[in-house]
Structure formats: structure tokens, C-alpha cells
Length: 504
Image 1 (cartoon, rainbow, N blue to C red):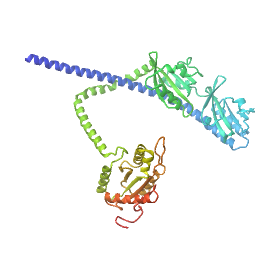
Image 2: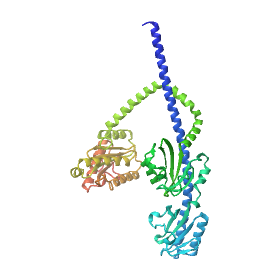
Image 3: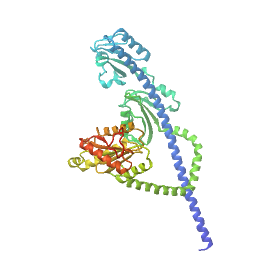
Image 4: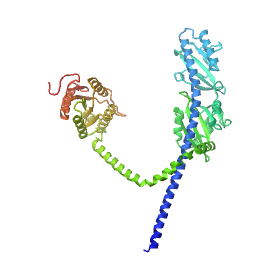
């Protein structure tokens, strides 16, 4: 091949290299732009969520103040034989005035009613036909419709519901309107605000669309929710969040356009704040946020520079993968697959390692044997027996420190080795904790079974200064537990005993 041909080939290679680098750079730029757009979108959503939460707090504080007042008046009533005396009705009138309520009522044992203006009614149903007296109404803002008007009421029993109740009643007109929140948040103008009950009934509204989403109507029906396409979450998740009072946001699509919904509960009450943002409004806000992304331009340049070190990163990743693979193989070799604990060999080696390095530090060995395990296998099946082993392994691992040694020696025999025990009191405490674990331990989902365990305990270095001696004496202690009726913990020598290795 001639020199010209070689140069041409070299030039083509360089061109291809430039093209490849250019393509990579373009892809990085596009990816970077998408990320910044998503980041700006998340910032906007979070700001709308903050506005919703601020509105929620305002309502929650109002509701909480009314509920606390109702409890206080109910407490005064319970301390007097005549629940409807002048002192209590005076408190009712003061509450109505200070909290800007529609009315307040005291209902006595006979279900007769007196209101904040001392008007007396023979029956609660005559004046409060929408109140259903039940335990699930207590400590909640209960919203009902009466004559086309949305009414909130808070019910507090006087002692119990059979002795009477205090009911404070208020409508949205008496609360700080949600429009006050809308007007106070410059960032969130020109969007729709709703105070909703959990079934979607609109209790209050502000912003755009108030002629469409009217108070008293159902927002989900108005949105035609069954025909909306949910982008970031499912429809069922959205409805479940509303029902259970979980904050969140949803992007929905219909007829080719997008809208964004932000929602948050009002304290523990059965209502929530919802904001609806149009696609146009969202794009305008995202565009505002992206104006400030110029300061991140250096990040894009840095990404281009990083390409130069790409090969080095690949090498490092290869080394890390090899290390991770080696670590994974080591873990598999050390782990008992059924229980998830250390296997017999690893358990023994780790205990021996600790003993060789910590001659002056106290430690405890628990040898655990599940009672009647053969009977469990014979009567309930080996699969259930495996479930018992697995559950015991999980319980033991969760009970102790990550630095302690917890292993399965085989069959139904387990070892727990607690390192660095500072004193006898701590050892007694840990022993009791393990003993109690098996007193109320259950296994099985459909078939419930309470396995028990016999436990033998030795203390290092008092009961033995090597693994074999500690294990042998723990086994002797376990044998005593079995002979004494099982389901108990037995020390080879009590931690408080003065006996040492070799003494009888």
C-alpha cells in the first residue's frame, strides 16, 4: 500500500474518531439537557408541594384549635352534674366568638341540646340531623352536607358518648379561605387550589377553574379520572395515597395534554389540600428555573473531559468487579445457605480468631438446640422444618450486634458468640434477652408454631480458653437444659460464680 493510501486511511480513521467523539458529546449534551430539565421540574413540583403543605398547616392548626377547645369544654362538662349549666354554655359562647364558629352544642344524657346562645332543643336530631354519634367520629373533622351547605363538625364525648357530647360546628366561610393561601403565594398564581374530602368532594376552591370545579362537586368526577393516563404513578397508587393520607404528586395526560397534581393531607383529618397545575404553567415555571442553569455549564465541560479518562474508569471498574466477585464467592463459601448465618467451619474459625487475639477480653458462647426438631420434621414436614431453621437464623441475626458471631453448626444446632462483654451484669442481660426470644417465638404464615430451644452457656476465658473446651462445656450445659425439661437456658458456671476452668 502506497504512502498516499496510508495517509488517506489514517485521515479517515481520525475523521471517524472525531465523528465518534462528536456523537458522544452530542449524546452527553442531550442527556445533560434532559437531566437539567427534569431537575428544574422537580424543583417546581417541590415548591408547589411546599405551598400545599403550608396551606395544610394553616387548616390543621385551625382544626386542632377547635378540637382542643371541644375537649376542654367536654372536660368541664364531665366535672359537673348539670352538663348544660351556665358556666359550660358560657365557655361554648366564648369558643364560638374566639374561633369564629357557626355554633356549638352541649348534648346531655337525655340527648337534649343547648347551643352557644342558650337555645334549648329537646333532641339532638332536631338541630343536628347530620350528626352520627359513634366512636369513629371522635377527634376528627367530620364533613357533611346539610341543605346544600358543607358543614364541618368536631365531636368530643363527655366521659363517654352515653353521657353526652360537645359538638362544635363550622363551615368553610368561617375558616381562612384557601384563596388567602393562593393570593399569598406569588409563585403559585394561576393554578387551581382545592380543599377536598378523601372521597374527592370539593370543600373549598380558589384559582382557575372554580366555575368547573365547584364547591360540593366531586373533583375526580370532574377530572374524569378513569380516562386519565397517569405517567409517574398508577391510578390505583394515586387513589390509595388520597385514601390513606399520603403526600405525593402525579402527572396526568388527557387528549394529548398534561397536567400536574400535588396533594397533601391536612394533619390527621379526613381532608386534604390539592393543587392542579396546567402544562403551560409548568413549562413557564420550568423555563424560569432553567435560566439559572448556566452556572452548571462547567459540569458539561467536565463531562467531556471525563471522556478522556474513560478507559481508566473501565479498568478500575474491571478491578472492582473482580474484587466484588471474589468477595461474593468468599461470602458464599462462609454462609449457611438455609439460615443465612455463618456455616460451621467459618463459625469455628472466627471464634478461634477472636480467642487468639483477645485473651484478656470476656466473651460468651451460647449453644442453642431447637427442642423436638425431629418431631417438627416428622409431623409438619421437612419444608416447615427448613422454615423453622430459617426463621430462627433471622431472629438470632437480628437480636445481636453485627460484630458478634452467629452461626449454624448443622441440623438444628446454632452458636452465638458475643464478643467483648464488659461485665457480669451485661452477660446476664444478654442471656435473659436470648432466653426471652424463644419464650414467644412463632414460625409460619398459615400454620403457626411456637418452637422452643434449650440453651447451654459458657463464658470465655473462665469456662475455657479455647474453642473446643468452650464448645464441650456449653454442650454439657445444654444437656442439663434438656434433662431439666427443655425450653430453658443453663450456664456451665453462672457469670457470677467464682469457679474457673478446671474447677469442680
